[in-house]
Structure formats: structure tokens, C-alpha cells
Length: 376
View 1 (tube, helix red, strand yellow):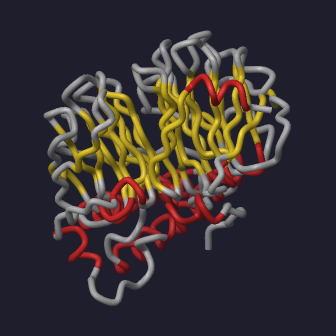
View 2 (cartoon, rainbow, N blue to C red):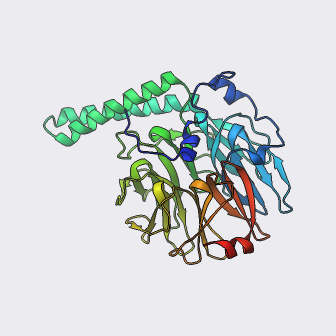
View 3 (cartoon, rainbow, N blue to C red):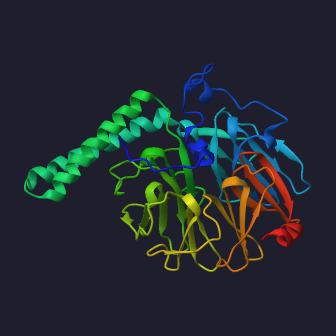
């Protein structure tokens, strides 16, 4: 079985909610049943937020996708699934994708107002099974040609384990969550998820293929993927794993791994620095596109789930227990906690100078100036 590292309950919720047995609905029901309209969507779990023009698009529990306009009005999008969504990204004012439980991938072509389902675990499981079979066949040939080579013997053992895992996943149905995504443009994108799920599309999500080549024999969760200005790609995951590709994901190398703490999110700053944040207040900084990493000391040990650079250049980290960490230079951070103490999973900034916080308690809105005055 894959080695598991501790997860804070709020982040574990994104991984576990919707994968356990549901009394009134099968997994297929949730994939086919549209998200229900509710006036309470902004008060339930919201896992991610992204600005799209002057509006903010938020995703969360029960297939909720909410759009908040510049005046502060919130409306609910039309979504074809009724399950937890974990991440969202738009590449322009119209085209966006969201991922979530049961390995669902959703696409919007109208700025988030409506969505269609491109992919789910029922289609992903056969892709992963075929990829595992191909890797095993290659490993068997290599081990047969060099029977005394320990490297090929280990690769063969890992390939057999991966095939067993893919077969078990196929038998259990579309139950594994996708946790992160990154699209370079409206055609080329990647999604990552639990137990090492990793897929790529080059046609805007019309078709997908499994990505192989990561050194991840224990099938640890892949939590976040990010593309950088130099064309390289980074993946962060469970147990402090960090991977880098310089050829659009065709080949991957593990980078320096300074921690065993699970990493939940990656973010790039305007300075060119890259941040990786995660369990127990872990914050890593890279000045060389993810080749090497250094620790950044923080005043707390709370787990961190979201990172946002504001228009001013300041950096805000969101995390466990309603925590926000604020820094004007990305080095020294001051802290603030939301009164509810509910976990914050990400943060965004409006054009009118407000912070939007999303998390276990839904949407919270903070005026920027009072927030700055009260961080300590």
C-alpha cells in the first residue's frame, strides 16, 4: 500500500469527502446529477478561487461553482456534477477548467457561467491501466536483457506494483480525486491527483493521456502542478516530493527534496521566485525555477494551503485554523486569524481592494486596509 503522511483535517477533507460511501447516491449518480441550486453556496466549503477579469470564480462542495462580480453579487453556475471540486484555473476570460473528486474534469467556455464534463474516473481508469501495462512490458524487456542489473530489477518490481494498483483502481470505480491542474493555454494542460494520477491534454481536454516517468513507486498523492516562464513544469506532492520537467512533461526529474512534509500548493511570484507551501507551516523558496529549494522561516507551524501575490507585490498565505500570513517582501510574514478559525484554502484580491477568502466556512470578504492594520 502507498506510504501515507499526515494530513490536516481540512486538507484531508478535499481528499476524502465524496470518496467514502454515500447512502443515497452511487458514484455514478454524483457524476451524472447536476449540482443543485442553493442560496447557501457561499456558506459551504469552497476550495479554490481565481480572478477572471473583474469577477472571481470559486469552486467547492457539491459541485458548487460561484461567480462573484465587481459589485459583490454572487451567483451560481450551471454545473453537471454533484461532487466536491478541488481546483480551478482560467487561461483567459472565457476558457477555464475545474477538477475534483471521482477524477472529474470540467470545462467552461463562457467565463465560468456554465460548465461541461470532459472527463471522469470511468474514462481515466482504463487510461491508467493501459499505461501501467505498457510500462510493465518495457520493464520486463529491460530486466530480461540485463538480468543482473539491480536498477532494472527494481524498475520491474515497481512496474508490477503500479499495474496492481491500476487494476485495483479500475475495480473500485471512479473514486480517486484530482487535486491540481495547470493549463499553458486553451489547448495544452495537465491534471494531477491522488495516488499519483497524472494526465495531459493537447487538444483542450477533448482527449487525454497518462503521464509516466515520475519516480513515484509508492503512488504518493500529487497535489499541485505549475508552469514557469522558462517553459519548465513543477509538480509538488505528498511526503515533500518535488519534480521538474524542461520538455513539456515528457521527462521528469526529482528535484532537491529538503523536507518530508507534504506540499499542497505551488505559486510563482513576479520576481521569478517559486514558492511551495504545505504541512506544518512548511514554506520552500526557489530562485532557479525549482532546481533547488531553501526553507523560509515562518512565525507559526500551521499547515498552508493557498498562496497569492497581490497587485501590490505583497504575498498572502492561507492555512489551518483561519490563518493568513502577510508579507510585503515575501520574506518576513505577519499573521492574522479569521474569527471562525475555520481552515482557509485560498485567497484572492478584488479590483476594489478587498481580500476574498475561501475555505471550510465558505466565502469571507475582508477590506484590505483594516486587514493590514490588524496583522500581527
